[in-house]
Image (cartoon, rainbow, N blue to C red; front, side):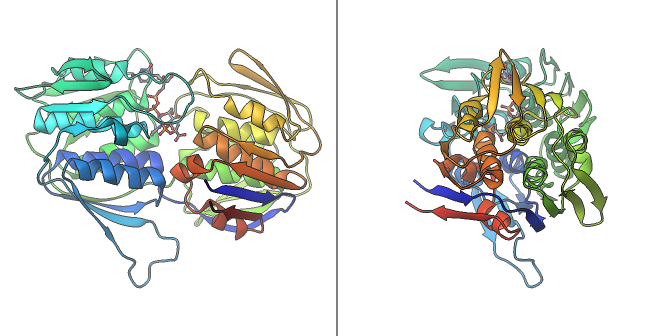
Amino acid sequence: MDRIRIVGGNKLNGIIPISGAKNAALPLMIAGLLSEDTLILDNVPRLADVAQLQRILGNHGVDIMSAGKRPGDHEYQGQTLHISAADIIDTTAPYELVSRMRASFWVIAPLVARMHEAKVSLPGGCAIGTRPVDLLIMALEKLGAEMTIDGGYVIAKAPGGLKGANIDFPKVTVSGTHVALMAATLAKGTTVITNAACEPEIVDVADCLNKMGARIAGAGTTRIVVEGVTKLRGARHTVLPDRIETGTYAMAVAMTGGDVQLAGARPELLQSALDVLTQAGAIISVNNEGIRVARNGAGIRPVTVSTAPFPGFPTDLQAQLMSLMACADGSSHITETIFENRFMHVQELARFGARISLDGETATIEGIKKLRGAPVMATDLRASVSLVIAGLAAEGETMVNRVYHLDRGFERLEDKLSACGATIERISG
Ligand SMILES: CC(=O)N[C@H]1[C@@H](OP(=O)(O)OP(=O)(O)OC[C@H]2O[C@@H](n3ccc(=O)[nH]c3=O)[C@H](O)[C@@H]2O)O[C@H](CO)[C@@H](O)[C@@H]1O
Ligand SMILES: C=C(OP(=O)(O)O)C(=O)O
């Protein structure tokens, strides 16, 4: 298995191009199942999760063509995918394919909406808690699907098609909102989703669905109204920039010091995280090219932060913030409110010498002057990248093992960081 070797201590200076968002690209690709026509997606990141979803969609009979680069495309341009689901030949998503990633479970929504049946294995994904799918099942049941669970598979049947309904989520769920939204586009009548997730990736998917002929209003607010239509057509859509990748590199610069332009980043997608970074002492400015992050000389100030659904501080940046706070001038407190077990990085950060104690859902971090490099390993994507950030700032060598998770969500991580002066390399095998 590949490893990443880092020799820490270098400041980061230069330009980091921000890729398309994994968490938008995945549901957008899945939305391609809703139409017989071709959905063209631009700025799709080259990630292990995208490749895995291509395999899953291929198994349903979807043809996916990845367009090559054109003259004038810059070196780091994301790929363009042409997704054609003219004939869905299989409505089963098998365990071997789905167990690797969470979002693949969401194929259940377009399959039952368009084909009136689906059989999808319970999902996998990052090990950050129990991650049930009860609310996704509830949403589809409300839309009239008969739902059963058998042998590790969720089976959805709606012989007469789905029917519009009121879906009130008892807690904010991104996955539940994606599933309800996609299914409701082809349901008969009106669906009202309340307590909907407001994440920018939901808005991106709703925008694309509307281009495909869906009638969705209110995406980005807690109340989404969908007027069902009988068919969706093809469309062309550009995946929005990855706010979690943006925040991750911003935290890396805040930790190592230096001055980096995050090209293509959109500040409104992560304002709460930028506010926290400013509080911590980073200098953030917004320009035509994206977001510039700098820290020169000043220490890192401690912060108190709780994760929350958008527009709050994202849980997907919690681990990275903890790395940063490991070197703050004082005590920080970080509370994780979304996932009950998203602290796997705590014991690994301790290998660098970080002083972190856990009390229920709150971590207290006593900042120290310098971390020291160490061999480390993580079991989820954002925890893995928090170890990379710590390694960049630490004295000496860090070896990040089991980088499989990083490849799920960070495109060309080593290239982007080494272009800014980091000593970082992948060791294959
Ligand atoms: C591929 C993708 O986009 N993943 C993101 C998505 O995950 P994901 O969509 O899985 O996260 P959700 O928003 O659905 O989960 C939020 C909370 O609701 C709970 N829940 C969810 C569904 C359900 O049926 N029952 C239930 O209890 C979860 O266990 C969790 O405690 O949003 C999370 C929260 O922003 C992010 O950390 C993930 O990166
Ligand atoms: C938790 C994440 O991904 P997934 O939901 O696919 O496990 C993530 O993107 O941080």
